[in-house]
Length: 285
Image (cartoon, rainbow, N blue to C red; front, side, top):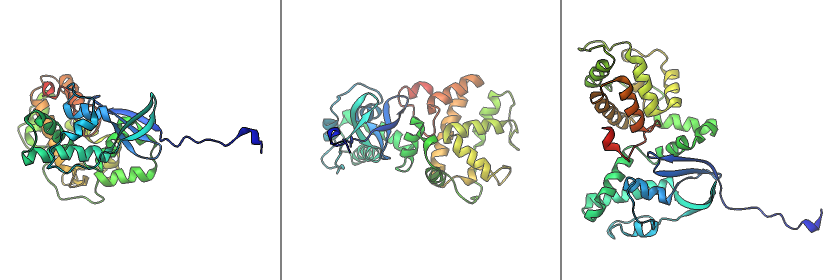
């Protein structure tokens, strides 16, 4: 061994191996080489404020929560990003911060000037669970294509059932009527128009993502009455899906053409599952 080389130094700092953005570009997110999913502190501030300018002091921002709300200790995570050293918070800490603002609003202890933060926090929470936020970061960063079979299996388990659940109406008639109108095929009840099968598929792919829809098709290769795709979706995911289909209905009802409808759907969902277009959301609805 050549003693002149000296000891080999290893940089212990975690490094970002995938990067992306969430919430219509408001929040930078990362996957670290130790598996943690991170949102930048500035991104958290922008997401909560809906993109409005505000104090860049993250610690002060958290300290302004009412003292009656017991907030977790927010420990910054320092890591090496493509642009150099930076810091953020873990995905689960982000969810806890969102919940703290909602809890403060429910308790009536949030200052009037902070109420819009609770509104934005609630919007985000409607589309997330602590299990779902990691998948959301993975999709935004493109990391999902690099995860192993184990992670993909866990993702399928989060979204999908192994066995078919009893039938429940998911695609309401009012949504079918508006989609049929857009496509020039008026619908007056009865059997669903066959041409809408491709429309349903596209909507599912925008809301749930391609890998989930592909797995749905593998589990239910011949969808038909009482064998619908939505019967294989987990019970705790169904309310989120129904909420998103209500948004699709509003966008269909207020669109005049098919291209306009798909443009607005793509903008609202940011072309990734369960994401919220926080900035300018009112403009698209």
